[in-house]
Length: 267
Length: 286
Image (cartoon, rainbow over all chains, first blue to last red; front, side, top):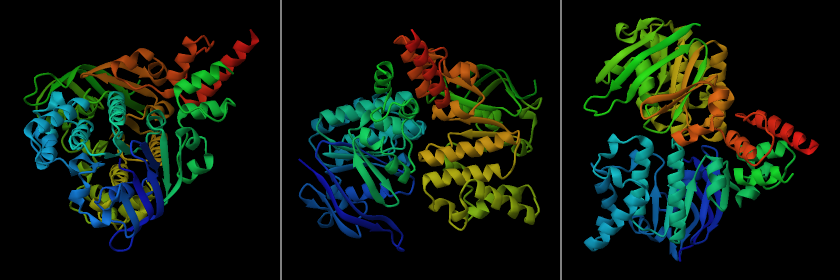
């Protein structure tokens, strides 16, 4: 089992710009965690340190018993998969299938195993129907699923999705939600950055709030979305239904439509 | 009624495409109104925008039947002057940024330079728009060194600065945090107050409900619904057509199903609070 621990981690970009300022984080194997906060809060920098794309300038990142400072990015990428915010940063094959196959192929698995992984990843993401298409003929929101499939096919213990909800329609959000569920059942750890508070409330048990390069608070969605002080620090709002309930004098626990119906009807 | 844009029986296919991307489209856009364009991805929303701007058929080629009229004149009969009338903000800000300017300030000024606006006026307008879009701090940065969210704001600024009568904006907030998104809507609201006509493609339906006047719903290349936002966004049957509806509309209709005597389906937060409070009072009376 691979727990992920950040111990007093800071990161400054070359030139001295401080992006993450002494944060501590502990994510247990199999947890499904959302990271929320403003643009520029340090979310992407933080997750890039989890898969070795960036190395902390202070503190330590521990993945199970690996300290990232002792391993190459290639070695870390076998344990932590990362889906970039912009899919075009990571797509370089001419068909969807070859894009998804690239990772498993590099791992030199038996062909049968390679095929199984590619098939499963394409199916889980709904990309099987586009497998022969050039990714760049697909809309951006679909391309994002191609990169998600490519990372799923690596079958890493930990997966990081950077803003997968950006530009998705309801069907896309539902598909994402199904993927998160399936990965959770397989015991994977999934860390997702999102600006969509409704999506976060519906799909995660743990939320980490970042603001101004630091962690403001972590907790369950119910705790976070009724903690006005943390929300204000991170310039976030409650989900719409929570706001409506608050105005109706129903305080404390509503974070989605189901909760709201129950509380309003029993009032 | 003062129609600034009209689409008459428009069908369009991209080159080599088997099925048309837009089919039998008839729609009138009224001057000074704010239109939200919604529907699932791949339903034709961006193609619709490109049609209005005349990128179709001039740039994308393909086969166009029917007419798109801007202020009564066919888009195909306009030359470059359509670019002064209609500002267009692309979905992907990378497409928007010119690549020939080294700073954000110059990038925002670029369009005005091309229109031959005097230097003092360019400076005044650029400074004003950069304040409005909250990108002053980025003035000296290279546009390609920005984050996705910052780049989206620069792209928006570079179009607003031209002060076109019509603005077509394709998903301007996909990379923005909730606060940044609200500020973009505030900018659009300010433009509306200046009597601009606005056509906005956006998935964040709760904000469309808050700010837009009219909503157009697309599915598989057809406009399947159009009208006043109140009427369209409270029509729950649209959910089955892949269109998103406001959270509060779904809440309202579910409460109604459960027997709460709610008189109207709310589409905004304010309405939800008001209508549900009324319904609760009504219920408790009985």
